[in-house]
Amino acid sequence: MAPASPDGLDVLILGGGISGLTTALALTKFAPPGKVPRIRIFEIRPVPATIGGAVNLTPNALRMLDHLGALQKIREKDYGRTIDYLEVFDVYSGKLAESDFRGPEGKGIGTPPYKALRITRGDSLKGVLAAVEENENITLTCGKKTVKIDETADKVTLTFEDGESVSGDLLMGCDGIHSATRLKHVEPERKAVYSGVSNAFGFAPVDKDFKTHFECTAINFARRGMLLTSYFQPDPTMVYVGGLMQVKDIGSRDGWKAVGADAEKTRAELLDRFGDAKIPCIVPLIEKTQDFYLWPVFTLSKHGKWATDRVMLLGDAAHAMPPQGESTGIVFEDTVLFSRCLTRWVEKGKPNTMKEAFDAYEKLRRKRIEVAFEESKDVVRTVSDAGWLGHTIKTYVVPWFLWWTHSYREKHFIEDVTKTDLGY
Image (cartoon, rainbow, N blue to C red):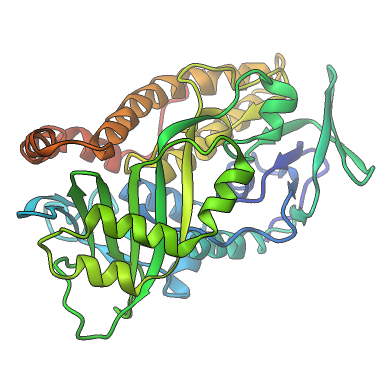
């Protein structure tokens, strides 16, 4: 348990989701001896949000969670289900390819080896929260809506809707795609844009003898979208069902909420898109799913401002993009790499302004994010509506693409940003 040190930084974090919590853990873990920061996290919701779909934590994501002490909590609670390999199907003709996480010896990828883990966003958040609670220097306050952000040469001040104000040495904006930190302070004109695709997801209870076409996780391509079907817990009595598909813009957040609340309409849409699948379990899984949530995928422009002199955006607040298989791992790497850059600046005796650490982080991170952004465009194109010919071409391209990019993806799975040369 780490208490804050008098000589440590006073850090404010907006956003009590996975990005904000892992940032707090990373800033604590990599703090110089005797300079553990005081970290105060503020979340707009009344309680941390544990609702969400099932994400794939790739080997690099698990490696970061292990460094931060959260993976142990996840494993203690038996959250998630290990993925040996991800399977790719055409719903009309069958299996197309695999993406393997077993590594050369079957134990995983990297040193030490990690496979992948399919886990709900809620369970991953619970694991990280459990790790946060063991650190006395970190506090989380919910139900706090930020209405104003002021920055001076030596501090940042948050003013909340209830009239309370708090000040700190720096502010971390980890508050997601519709970030108040970005919209009220860092770059107000950079607003989220609807990507054109949405994720309709839910959870289907099944009998233990229910026959599926996949071992753990399957990506199922159709002419009008992609359906993800996956186990996400050790007990195979529940399947995550998520349809990524092209949906017209509703026009407002309230409008999306209203449409998303009609679960039966969303179910009917999925049956219309995937009901002609030749894989026998596809339709029953959609029919068995209890409720559906419609989640529009928003993005930010590729280039944008991430920081001021004392405020830094991380995760979706800085670079939201459509899901491209590694999104969660990218967030974890953001938090660890930034924390190491900030720690190096403190270790050097704070020779210049804090912006020195910010600039070092951006120099290391921008290229990786820009590449991931371009990859996410391919996801949007792949799940967009296509005719018979376009879909047929896709079934030939996808296996070739997975084969061609295997080495590139494995390079990222092996990567450990705790060892990256910071360059300053």
